[in-house]
Length: 128
Image (cartoon, rainbow, N blue to C red; front, side, top):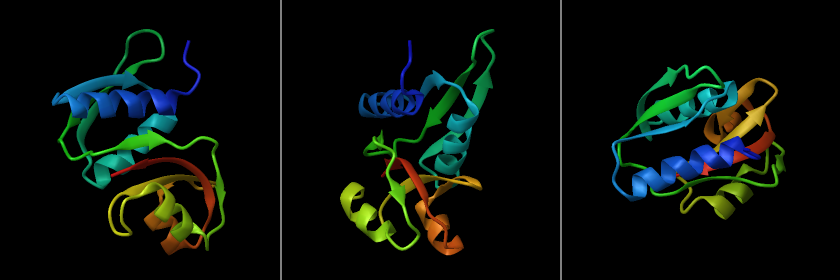
């Protein structure tokens, strides 16, 4: 039984990257799809495809070897639009390296896009 699907996905991706695999298979959901789309847009992962297994489905993800660390942020901290710098210092190794994933009322976006839009949200995870 899965309790935190986001943490499970980040764990599978990180473990596969650490041992040098070129692809991995993770559980699927619409939230995971949105997270993977952001990671793909920022070029942390390659293409991914949905595999229908008759239950919840799975994603097959092509890994590019560019992820040093990724993880879920628990508890899901609320971040006002003016406090992203504080959380960048806490979870990312440098100001311009990596990204925080933020769940907003408009969907899942990166912290860079949230700063541009001037919106806050809940922190989901980080990747660098």
